[in-house]
Image 1 (cartoon, helix red, strand yellow):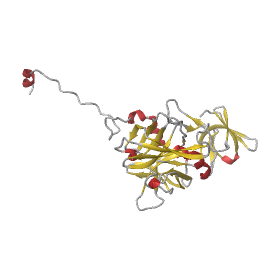
Image 2 (tube, rainbow, N blue to C red):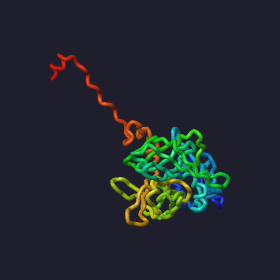
Image 3 (cartoon, rainbow, N blue to C red):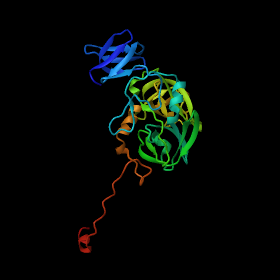
Image 4 (spheres, helix red, strand yellow):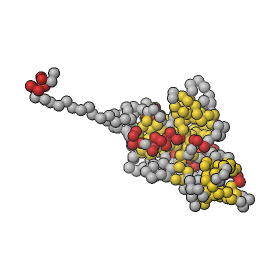
Length: 310
């Protein structure tokens, strides 16, 4: 951020410096000679890069205007501090962006990252499959209308990160509701999080818990551990913070246990999306996310030369 970020306080004071982080309870700002942690409830306005932003917007939004998109990116980050809301309020606005992903061998969950139909799910949800459909609930005049989209293209996938990028390509598909990708790094252990998904096929199921740890190492990868209930069918769904931002992708739980769910940090998702060309799906090799070059063909030599070279 620019060096002239400003926090206007409710007691008519102001702090100028460089905002380093926006936590759930406070904003961290570098004022040059020290770093201050300013409580969020003491802030009336934030001025970021010469643009004033309310510290507490009136409510959550499925397609928030307060977002920032990098050139060439297909997802958006929050560009300003967003107030926390209740899970009930957030589910009402975020639910349309969460979908059920179906294949002939099973089902999972996913979520849209932009209005053009790009969505994230787990690699293991679509592994070995090319016939994919997506179940979406559209809000029509306050009523939920379920619709199935059967033209779904695999754009990219990374088996080792357990991530896949899909795109709905139905000709009559509308603009979709989508969600912001937040920062898992800004979470603290004990912060409340919640998931939306389709455990055991039960669509639009909401579960809530806390972040148990941010750095659980399993099979050489770092995961977020949460008490949020995760079951088969939740795989590929979003894990949200209380600002309505995706902080992880739920992908597994420990068998025969409760309250031990795991999610892929959203930073891993962003890396995958930013480098999606490297993970581009090859339709000629549907079981693997990588392209292979054809082996060089053997040069046909005249019979006399071929015999001499043996």
